[in-house]
Image (tube, rainbow, N blue to C red):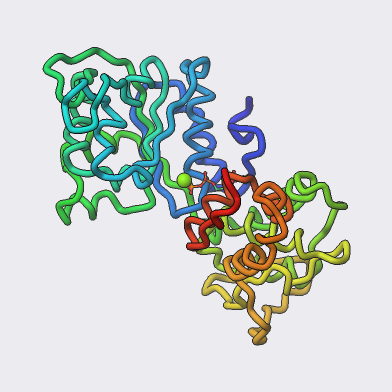
Length: 331
Ligand SMILES: Nc1ncnc2c1ncn2[C@@H]1O[C@H](COP(=O)(O)OP(=O)(O)O)[C@@H](O)[C@H]1O
Ligand SMILES: [Mg+2]
């Protein structure tokens, strides 16, 4: 594969920062070095971790992926490192942790900045000694794990504030890959938007849609604080709501704020979009309204299908937006 080609299928980018990122991914993939991926939420950190794994000699094994922010603090040590039977109330059997499960493979620790301090101490030991010790065990075991960590936070600042161990920070900060925010990627934004639009139409089995001029301009000028994930959501929503083959700006429901950055050229004449107060319906509002209106008439599978998302995603969004499922719909 050439240096400037994306390291994984479907990963889009041709601005200089992304090409440099691809080059680095390819380089680090061939080593066993710990990698720290830093970037705002939705910039593609997980995609990069997967690329590193898939291009490495460990590709034959499954990458073990753990989101440190998603596991309750009192369970995380046992989840990651395992525990001995009887080591705490509820530990009714010996359990293998995820670090051990990643033996001979890659361990992807997402949101590593959220790892509690005690778990950080155990992780340091894994990195220093290549050894793992279960909670409540006196014995340790050798493991061969390649660590890829990601965070949207400034780890250095967490160290200064006393939330992250300095020694672990230096262990992890061997090779840092910085993923630029979407708003700094120039024309990549429109390239991504077009590709995501195609992908979404195919997935939702709709006719192929295109962006109208105003929609493209709005996409290019918006700051995308939620990065590629927000772009995907906005497009998914527009595809669901579209009533003609051309997507207008209003369907994207992005705030009409103009970024401080220079507007990206779309076509020849660039007129910055003006901030007209449209009836604003955010993706969250739309989702909530849709679910509340239709949940009595549809089951979860139908709802998810109509929204163009997976059932798992529907469940996650219900949790996030606080619209729990009605009791009558048994699992
Ligand atoms: N360069 C890219 N090309 C195509 N899709 C991307 C790119 N970067 C991110 N995505 C998509 O955006 C979404 C968010 O990416 P993800 O890796 O989960 O971000 P993060 O972990 O940084 O929050 C995913 O659906 C991912 O496939
Ligand atoms: Mg992520």
